[in-house]
Image 1 (cartoon, rainbow, N blue to C red):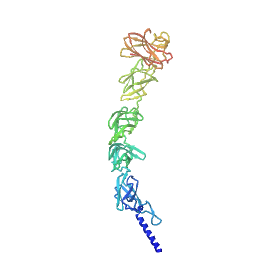
Image 2: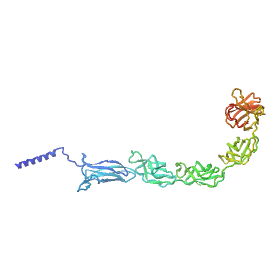
Image 3: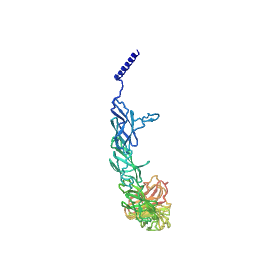
Length: 554
């Protein structure tokens, strides 16, 4: 009986085994057919590694434990199998790596800082696959034509293999946080030429770099592996003398590698701007102002090496200076047509070596003379000295040296002394017109002047035209001997509103008037020979009384 049971049990086992073989749900692995890499194509930044997982699988993606070999690694790539991946206890208590496992991890890196595209082959059990890696570069290598260019030298950077420059790439020299843009002279896909600024130091950084093996990637900014150093400053220009005479020309010569531009300017401290009288590419001829001393500052200097003018202009200080300053101009050798003129008599002034500007002034004892005229050639000036000048010298301002006509000089002292009396003025009382100062009309083409100063006498309030606008008048008696048109003007030194009227001798007929509120007031009027009444009328009465009056008749 026991033998029968054992037989039946054996039969059942055999039948069960047969059933398992024929059951389609039983998962027996097929032979491996493919190596799967994740990823199979990759971008890697130089200096980093990319992990890649490798499995040997069948057509149903079922992995087979195996060992992988790496071959055909392109130049510039590094590929290694990770021997620390999925450690296990194999021989005791120590973790060990299994060379044969279902999945391995690879690390892919770069040995080429300039980047490259490469491939490598992964093989297991006679099956192989190829992976592609594109390395993103870390720098542009050391393709600089010079790492120590002179000021203004053109430097060319040649791109490494697989790298190109865009047509709008820019260049800068970078040292830490200091960025100095360079001037790009020429661009080509595989080279870029530039002029670095003086004092630039550091790596050369190019913005606008593309990868030939990844044309769809945006352009990037990359530095060179090598650094560049440019001298700090150009050498200084120099002065031809350190002890110039007043009016003597001085030559400034440009330093090596420099030129002067068409608008280079020169100044001294003290002294101010010099006058440039001639210029060449490498020299400036100047006339320094009186009192100029020390070194000269020259602006708008350009550099001449290579294409250095693109760097713009520089300001340079001369290597030497005026140790003996240019003599100062403190006096003017005036000559007066009269040093004791009669009241209202014009004085003509000349000064050898000087010219007079239109705004020239003469001051005697703190009181300004009236400047009547400056000649067209600026060699003479006609003045009306103030009254009561007793042996005074004048202070002249806004005269210029003949050789330095654009530099006004102020505070010049004179040697000759001038003496004048007081202007004649009729006193109050009686007929103001009968006692009025007499002005004789001049011949055509000449000018008659009449000046008064001090407290002037005015008549009782009137309105020359009638009406209620009363005002105090000052009268002048004009004697005319030649029938023609006359230009008559009255000016004064005081605030207020004075008007000018021209009447016949009796004061009955108004021939011309100028009530404009200007100073001076002026009219043009046709006059026959005879005597005429000029009125300086303060029509408001409350306006200030003039302390100086000048009447001109032409």
